[in-house]
Image (cartoon, rainbow, N blue to C red):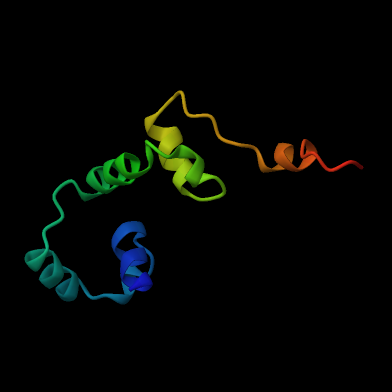
Length: 85
């Protein structure tokens, strides 16, 4: 399933599928405005819980759609954690 999602969403290994196979899949499962729609769906699924995106590619999606989104900085979290030196 992961390989299918990576091909569908990211285009990874798309060259491993023939033009005919792609045409058959798209005929059965059309992709109107897929890139924009899938990004919007990702955003809508995370917008209310932005802290769950830390350390994932999902924070890229939030940053793209929400200019007020503030990413957490992993280095600063380590440097500012409460453990004494």
